[in-house]
Structure formats: structure tokens, C-alpha cells
Image (cartoon, rainbow, N blue to C red; front, side):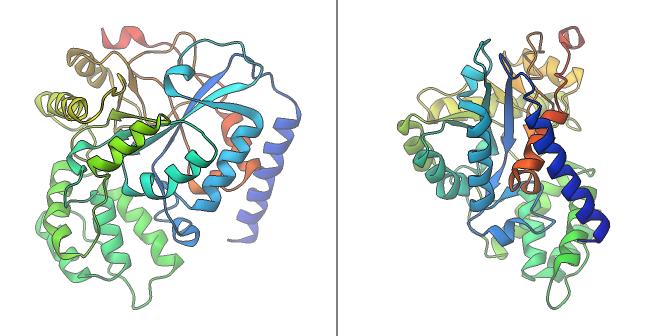
Length: 340
């Protein structure tokens, strides 16, 4: 970290603690946080290509303790109801249904008796397939068949990946982060097809939860599960028929697996368009969660409920966390007319 970035980081931490010291009235406020993974290795989670969507056990524990200090951690259904508690009500949600949600995150949540909701990409449930960005980035990072990954991506007409040096380091991790961002702008079906072709040869464990773990966590009473699509692909670029297939099929899969699945559907997209909200309503969805946003509003759009994303840098410092949360103070306005 450069001296300039270090100074900015310190300023953000101090600003967060100062904002909290102002005792901003939190009575009646609610928010939904969105996370993805909690890795067993803190150092691995802090690498640039993982940090936007991975926490380590230490940073996850720091996040929980910082939240408990200023809010009540509640279920998703409770967060969506009006309240007059002097502290904010915050719900924790996890997207994709990663295996480490059960192996690393769940034991910590169970230790503190804190509820959470997990939105599952149902096509990964107990199946030998992986999430495309994990297949590609970890294959390159671990130097497993890196040349084959390069050639397969190029043959599919996708941007060529940066080949790893003999000893991948922080700088290469930053390059990978930029490459993954470029792939997210490509055809999601083409990227998924490449990952599915590569996955069997890269010696990676299944990325998704297995059905037994889902049932066990649901039986504990602290965890509930919702649908997040069938495959890990953005919905916005897809055809209407493909989007409806994702929504309907994933909800049907979950209804067969869970006793009381969540009504809410979680979009893989950060900000659902009018078209996407209209299609969700056509598929019978009454509540749908966006991938980003701010605090909840009494007049929120039920098909674009905002969530506040939590990255590794934000989670590991209470100062940064308070600054991040309080900077997203303005709730999203009601856009209900947009999808009619």
C-alpha cells in the first residue's frame, strides 16, 4: 500500500469512528447486507482478486462484533418490517450458496446465535461444477493448466487471460482482478460454458453447497434459503425466456429441497432494470433483492430491495465499516412505477 493509500485508509477509518460518535439516530432504520464467501484462510481472502467477495474468519468475526455493537442482527423477514427499535435492524444475506458458507461462516453464526439468509445458485447444489470466476481465477493463480485455460478462453472468442508468473504475487492478483472485471462484461453463457469445460481438469472441489448441508442448516432454525438463479450468470444480457427459466427453475428446485424457502428472489445483478423486474413479477416473484443499494425505505420497490455489499477491506475495520454504512445513508427511492 502506498503512503497516499495508507493516508486515505486512515482517514476513512477515523471518519467512520467520528460519524459514529455523532450518534446518528438509527431508530426505525433497517438494512440488508450482502456477502458471498468466508474462506478458512484470512491471508488468502485479502488478495485483490478475492477481496471484493471473500472474507476470512477474522474479518468475518470483526464484522459481526462491529454490527452487534450498533445494531440488532435479525432475519430477512424482520428487517423488511417497520420497527421503532433505537438501534438499526440489519439482516445478513449470502449469495451463490458457496460450500464455505456451511463450513466456515455457519459455525461462527451458530456460536453467536445470529440468523442469516443464503440465496443459492441451484445448479451448483451437490454437483461437480464450479462458479466461472473461481474456476478461471483460481486455475490461473494456482498455475493449474494455465496455458489450457488461456487457449480455451481464446478459442471461445473471449479476452485472453494474463498468464501467471512462476510465483504469483500481489501484483498478479491485481491483474487477475482487472481481468475478471473484463470477463463480467462478456457473454455470460459463453463464459459459463468455458468454465464448465475447464472445471473437471483443474482439480477444484465443488464450489456449491450440498443438499444435506442445506437441510441441516435449515433445521437449525438460524438459516433460511432463497433462490439466486440456476447458473452463476448475470441475467440482464439474457433473453426473456432464459431469464424466466432462471427464476422459475431455481425457485422450483428450492421448493423441493427446503421446507420453508424464502419468498424473496436475489438477482445476480447489482441494479435490476425495468425489464428484469417486470419479468420477475411475471414469474410470480413478490420480493426481489438487488445486489447493491443503501438503507431500506418505507416506500421501497418490492422488486428491487436494496442491499449493502460488504467486501473484505470494509469488514476488517469497524471504522471503515461505519464509514461505508453511514455513507449509504440515503435510501433508494420508490421506483414501483418502473416495472408496471
